[in-house]
Image (cartoon, rainbow, N blue to C red; front, side, top):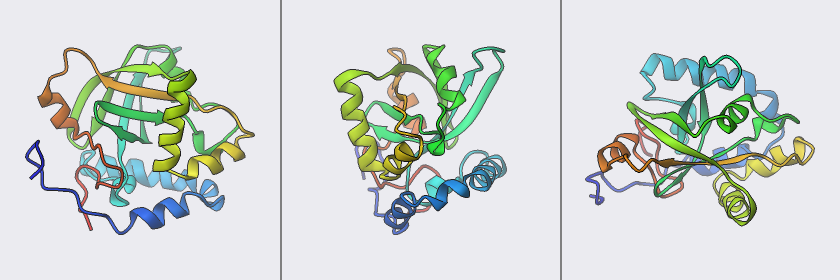
Length: 193
């Protein structure tokens, strides 16, 4: 058992092939139906099952008020787990423009994050300078497809955000969100291979 009482993670046999597929340009053409399927799976399973998680990669649902309307907007995203939170990359599937969720994050200091059945409010920081460079290297190690998306976008500098537990977040909140510190560990609610 791990320190938090979870069984130790095993390698998911789908992770390596999915990371390889993520570097193929044709994936960008099939993105819209994949996003629809992802959203359908999350709705039907109460956010316990998702395509990214089946592949052994971490994902979350991010809810943040729209910067113009204030209406809460929820989006499912691949995330890079960190010991005290998550790293998000605004790749927008390699499009030339930034994703709208990243513009919404620029306008707030915190956001609601859901993984599996857990939810927590986390602080949001746009990364710059050396911290951004280190986070970009970590993102590329976790999801090599970001490089292909970067090239497809015309080499647009992707916005990178760090989501961190606020000072008031206790260990229970961290456990509910099931923060994974090891790349390749199965995502919450997904069977490991």
